[in-house]
Image (cartoon, rainbow, N blue to C red; front, side):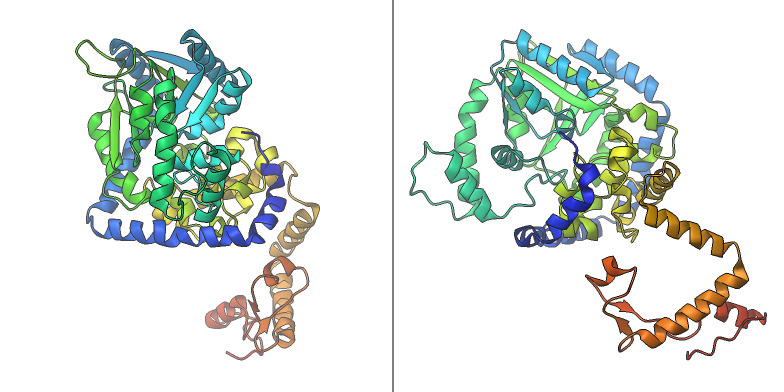
Length: 480
């Protein structure tokens, strides 16, 4: 996927002015936030499971070399083949070679963020192979030639009317007067169109929610069953996953599954949780003849042991973006690359470079909701602050911001001058505010253009603190 993260400011401006996007994003609260809260309330041990999940992922990352080698052994013993890929280019080349060896002209695909990361659809199309997305949301955005706007709900930015228009534009072979006014009718039509594509495909590509080192299994969690058809019907099954998807044992997998669906969609468990271990064995009624796992690094190993190490605990539930007020306002496309929301603001700079994605860590109010709901307790605000520090060190921040921070730092090193200026500024702003609020304010137009700003009232914090301690400078003359 081609990045437009460098154009985040422009992307966000277009997003906040899009009335259709506002209507679509209004469904996030009912569809995700409320359901997660109810699912969490029904499970008394939810917080203990979060702690256990964090420990499992931390242990795995601390011994990742061991578990990677063990996974290759168990996978090979089950009849599968592992392809080690350091970069997206290597992953694309490995997948294309497997498809060519299978004589593939059509490839069915389950939802895969790694597939988006390596832009595999574009690569296959450029080499004469037709990829067909089988997840309903992914199928819709493939028709629109758009990237996903959410990790688990790719088409969350669209309304039903837009989907109906797309189906009518692309499904010309179906009766023109058919009814598509209800979601069930849209689902039935997608199922009808995709059924033949499953039968035509020589290769099926899926992602993996987890890889189990103990058994060599890949795990997909879906609600539509398309993943099962994608990996069982074709002759060849390709799993595309990144190195941090490993878990040591099936017991560990069970812990993570218990928090995944609850955090993502508010379900106890997803409709389908499917484990695949190698190709079809003698006596199996179905399954592929060949089973390949393309395992991608693409910058992740460089994150291990760094200040961004904990981001690799992510299990791609989407809870952070579901609860993020910034994501609610601008949707996922504004972030400009594969991973949107708070987790994208941490992952993307590490994967595509801070020079390209330095705007993203600033797309946060630091309200902390993302960390409070993350099932793996990833400290996302702290890591965004680390990226802001790196942005400043590399002189990527605008000159006006750097100048302002420099002036503030100079004042902060001079406490008496700082306190005097804040007392004067607070008193002046208090007198200028209309009815206790600012509707516009010089140098703060980005804030006051969309919301009021309270005018200061009473003494400054430093003045109150000094007064309570009985130190000089403890009066400010303001009302309390």
